[in-house]
View 1 (cartoon, rainbow, N blue to C red):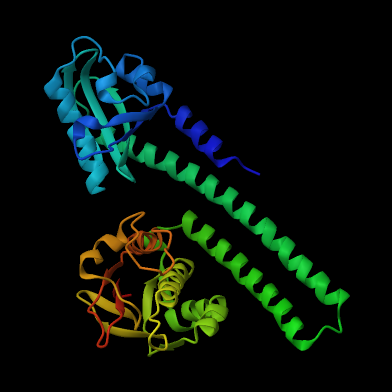
View 2 (view 1 turned 90 degrees about the vertical axis):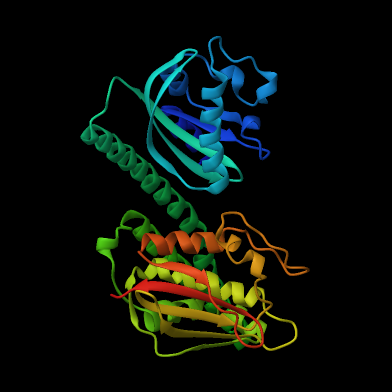
Length: 366
């Protein structure tokens, strides 16, 4: 079994670029402090960062010569990225304070929970646009390679127990050939779900390796996507007494595995947050989009308060659902990330008559 925290720590330390992670516990940028830094960060900056890790700013002595204004400007940049979750790519700046003197390039990436990662290097003199682009491409290529390796490892680790479950179900069926029909149906359902889960893992792995928009194809939402989702969520739909209906849905540009995950998440949310006062109904239909086709996933559940309609797509956001079970806070954010990668998007649509939620998926014309 792979030790994932250890794997990430190894990758972090082996980066040849400086890398740091900063946390902002309050709305004051000056309160931000390092929670991690690799060895290359100290080499690039020219002084040891170890004493600063895990320490509040007012508990550490900065090296001699640091200019407070420049240090505040740097903190403000990181704070803005962490709070607003907007990456800052290939930012170039001159620094002339303390031991940090020279021309630098840095990219800042939000990690969620008011945390930001910074990857940086020092450059001599002005950097030509081609050199900056090459550095960016090399960084992205290395990152993609590491992510692909990680995805392959995760897929392998997930499929191993599925194979065991499917095998045990088959043995159980062979050992008890005369089992009651209801028990046989349950065993066959286990086998079906393990097969579907294995297909899902293969599909997501394929998408993670080839997510480029140029490699997309026309996808049959009704047959290839929603048919699969119905099979996976069959038990939950029946348990909730829900009705799932679809109108004539068009072909859209995308990737089947990715879209299966999006619709599975949306329909599962509709089931989880159904109203206790009426039978759950989920309708999936086509509407006109601003630059192509839009698909509405409409339910008659408890709905989303107006003040949460933008926040629901933020990583880790969990609204107040009363006594309803909380989700992970990552489902809708993941849906948006997948759709954006496909050149599509998602938004909260108009509230349906009688209450509920509309999730509107915006696609380009295929």
